[in-house]
Amino acid sequence: MVSKSLPKLPTVNLTLNLSPGTSSWTSTCNNIRQALEEYGCFVAVYDKFTLDFHNKVVDVIQPMFDLPTEVKARNSSDLPYHGYYKPGKPMPLLESLGIEDAAMLDKMQSFTNLLWPTGNDQFCETIHQYAKKVSELEQLVMKMVFETYGVEKYLESHLNSTTYLLRIAKYRVPQEDENNLGAVGHTDKNFITILHENDVNGLEVQTKNGEWLSFESSPQSFVVMAGEPFLAWSNNRIHAPLHRVVMKGDKPRYSFALFSTTKDTIETPKELVDDEHPLQFKPFDYMGLLRFYTEDVSRMAVCTIKDYCGV
Ligand SMILES: O=C(O)CCC(=O)C(=O)O
Ligand SMILES: [Fe+2]
Image (cartoon, rainbow, N blue to C red; front, side, top):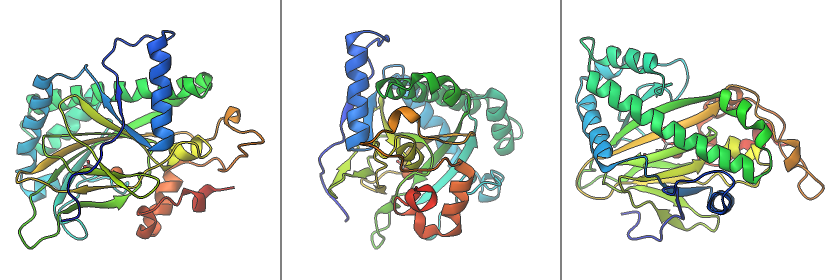
């Protein structure tokens, strides 16, 4: 067993009816910034998400994993880590599918028809709603982050060039003689990731001093986690944490990861550069970064964005 009971991740309540300009808005922005700088992540408790909806989402995805492998393999992509990932080395417990632009109904319909040529409206509608709600959460967090750094003038163009990939994963229960590591330690290579899971815990995030913190899942809890491009954008203020999945319990774990990234060049706003914080990263684009990581997979396991575009 890799770990037992661990301390928990910081939590930010987004259940308040937050409106910009109020004191609760400003203090929530500060809490988010502090959590991202210190931990690279936080648990957002988000009340736009009901228990009923959570149950529906978890229910509709289970039959997807029961489809024959050759059907799931229709989920292919030219981009690495975007299509079907079948269980195997080095992560035999993990199986996942990726849906590009799941918040767009036509893209969600194409994905659904690929897997169920005679249709599956319930799946399509539920996952589309899921992606919409969680991308709204991502946009709220971005708005708060841009505001707390005083760079809100760049928000609109950032949001306009944002794209989302929804990756839905199943981690099976390990056999007795098998390791319980579901996903090996890594940092994310996209801008920001929002994670949600069924009632089987497993996500662990490493602090800057090497301690592992665990995520306690709940129907309204989402882990908002920074990836390496966000660290570079912030001129090294935001942390991009190492994280992994350790399987606990005796039921499969289902997780949903909404990865956001941007089509445009990623550049540190000049407002985040001064004598105390000299520019640390050259402008770069996500595709180039992705190619850099796939050329050598050992680059996936640690934060290596400095090697790619450090000044
Ligand atoms: O399943 C999870 O909770 C984590 C998945 C993850 O870290 C990833 O796909 O990058
Ligand atoms: Fe990850």
